[in-house]
Amino acid sequence: MKKFLADTKTYLAFGWKTFKACPWLFIAVPLVLFAISLGIGLVEGLLEFFFGKVKMELLIDIEGIVTTLLMGIGVTTLYLRAHDHVDKAELRDLWNPKPFWRYLGVCFLGSIPVILGLVFFIVPGIIIALAFSFAGILVIEKGMGPIEALKESVRLTKGHRFELFKLAVATLVINILGLCALIVGLFVTVPVSQLAFTHAYRTIAKNAAA
Image 1 (cartoon, helix red, strand yellow):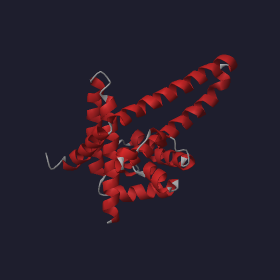
Image 2: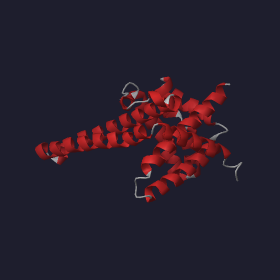
Image 3: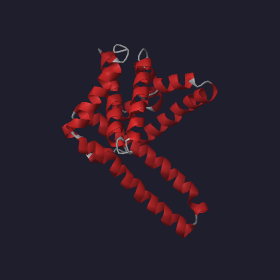
Image 4: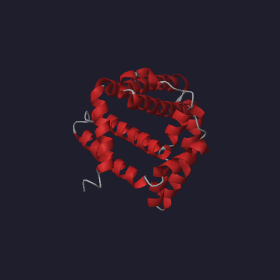
């Protein structure tokens, strides 16, 4: 069992070590994102009040997608920086709109086969999701286009998908435990999980380049 979970433990141990090095930064990230979401929600409420919910529905839906994508880019950017130099990572790393269109493209193109696989066969959908799991990072860090990033993610994850699956299951379990710990546990388990996944990406990409 120890050998079976060796890589997972290594990734999680790195996540925990990095979190402990700068805990307030990682705790502040969800608080900042929550504050932004709260502010946007307030603006949406005012728009609905003055112009009507029906008229603003499409605009609000688009805004929701844009906000979600920008947050995803920002969080990934910050965690990449924290992985390499935790002392240099800052909250302003959350603002990184440059790869927005490429990130939108990779999310859209990558989600179609994953959704179809999950709907019709489940297991293939999971395998495809694991194969594409590095695509968003590659768009953000390497500046790749959507299709190039998806292909490169498939190449990098080949032979490592079961390894990534074990990590996904492990992080799901610890986040459930974090949720059970009066929810506040998520302020620890979520960043540890994200740092662990980032370390998995760094390790696998480094080994592939060697």
